[in-house]
Length: 257
Image 1 (cartoon, rainbow, N blue to C red):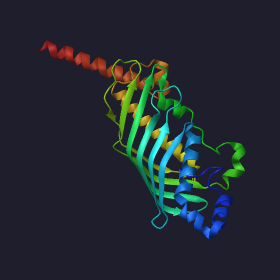
Image 2 (image 1 turned 30 degrees about the vertical axis):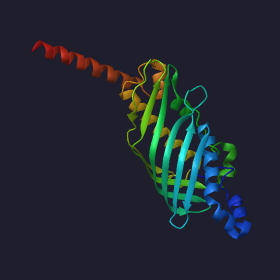
Image 3 (image 1 turned 135 degrees about the horizontal axis):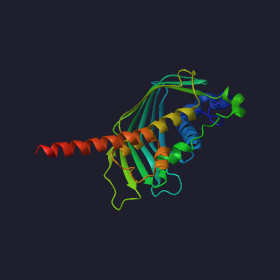
Image 4 (image 1 turned 60 degrees about the horizontal axis):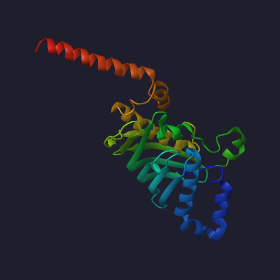
């Protein structure tokens, strides 16, 4: 989650290394990485992203990011859409040009899914994602920006607290299905850090929305809103057929009782 035009360019890294013979960078690497990660994630998701701390072991090439908070867009009741207790990352190589991570694991994840007649908070964030530096005019800048490869990503054991504005009582929390991604940035020999953030958030949002749909928590949305959150017409038809088949089975069963 480190990179962008204003983040870790070759020039800025060289300047930092020259300051105090590299002592300043070494002693403050965690704080620097924290500010850079917050900057990239906030610009990418379009909502405020706060990080409690980034602990970096340069010797072991390990990074631990703790207490990540992704704010809700305006208009929703909860302050946060997503909180993550810990994201542990193992690196293979760390250079000025490429951060090559072998794996990342997200733990203690909590999703505040808010559903309104017009959509969800996760959908609003997902639809407004903009990766910094992706524009054509930034072509020259991209040549000096640090790229990211993440070969394996996993998030397990998360929970979703649904808040449905159309209901008088709120459903109980449900589980987030395990999320696994692989090969982020491998084909491209590295992607912008914002692109990696984008892919991870979209996976979390899509998995949470599917889980809510399977529990019947999106029934108050109209067809356009369902399409917007990613529940396609084919899936709706499948659910209808499944319900009708179940009802028919009950009727047939009752004939023999």
